[in-house]
Length: 365
Image 1 (cartoon, helix red, strand yellow):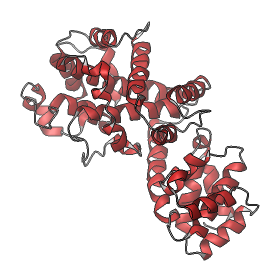
Image 2 (cartoon, rainbow, N blue to C red; image 1 turned 180 degrees about the horizontal axis):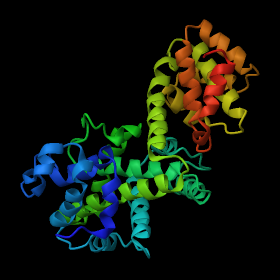
Image 3 (spheres, rainbow, N blue to C red; image 1 turned 135 degrees about the vertical axis):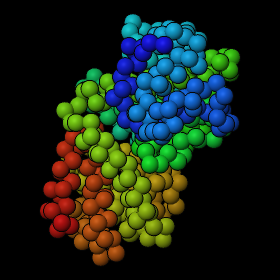
Image 4 (tube, one colour; image 1 turned 90 degrees about the horizontal axis):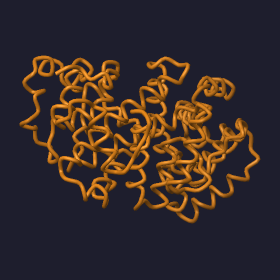
């Protein structure tokens, strides 16, 4: 079988990004090895698994073998027809299909789900609805702000995991899955995308084809939209995003102390003062989710009061820093707080060195 030119981009996709697509090809819905998967008999697969990049061409061929199509565009057209989605080019069709399926998943989302989604995409919509977030992302994309569409691809990849009974990508060492860049990966995987009315109306084969196309479309979106439109190298962008993901997990560990409302209020005040300097304040719900791992409404009355008071704080960054250090927050933790705030906005991700500058100014380095 000849290599499909529409899937040539597989040759420069990093191994971790392939996890969802590789799982679809090699595993059944309940996690067993697929008998019809020809990858298991290939020497390169046997030698290099799970370093998927080493056998990217085999993955491209296996996509067509298992779906029964002779070309990827024919497979894409078949899936688009199932959902009444159209476009002029392969990229346009994939783009429309991704948004359509995200809309299906979002049909039963709560406000919390939409806030989490907006946080993942690094956008601040006028309304926390599907259309509100889509409008905000489209505006960023038109301005060549690349991060939201990159994160859309990651979120779609996570949603495709809902095809499986259990997450087959939970442990992909030594090539750690890029799904770890999505803070709410498990939550997105649990959304009933494949249980929606439109998916339920399809045959089992058509549902598999749709899952495979969505995984491939997410790969292309990351490659074309993110790496193709940024001035940074691919390695540099990956480094920044991995750092941001790590910070999102580490900051709530020291910022959210249930019985220490003073610390929480000061952390929130630092956020308001720091981002306020760049006229980029985060909405309250997004800021609380990012800093404390909880939405504002999930906090206790005392904690909510400390946040409300912090929003009107007139303390300087230096004063807030001294108070936090006096409460036992370490210098390293303060640097993590500055880092996650510096990387919390699409524009600030391009000037990460600002957080280093402030760490020096505040005597943390």
